[in-house]
Image (tube, rainbow, N blue to C red; front, side, top):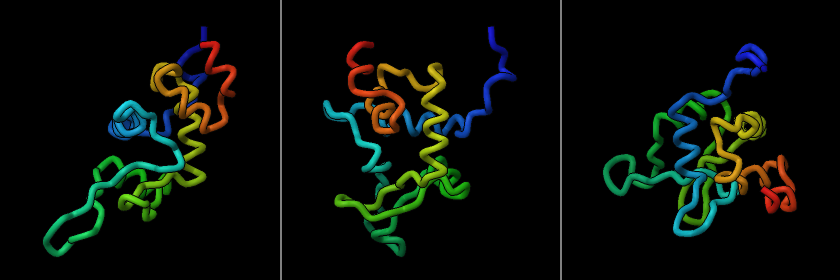
Length: 121
């Protein structure tokens, strides 16, 4: 049996993991693509009109260089950087943190599973 010392520390904090689970889970009967990034709402009025509203979990990932902001077809998005994708791969390997069946689409996007392996599970 492996101990906790055998596993590297999780690259994401608990609020960040929760945000990833919520945003990358199924929405309106479809799974989001990793290439679309994380949706960010925008300010509708005031001095920050049109700028993204940045949740604390996204802000901490931004500060550590795991995500960057890019414009999307429906507003700004937080896109995972190369470092962020590596951290996400590490997170996906922990079955307790990210259920392999529920997040099979992300495992395929990250190259951890092939479509044939996902169909078997």
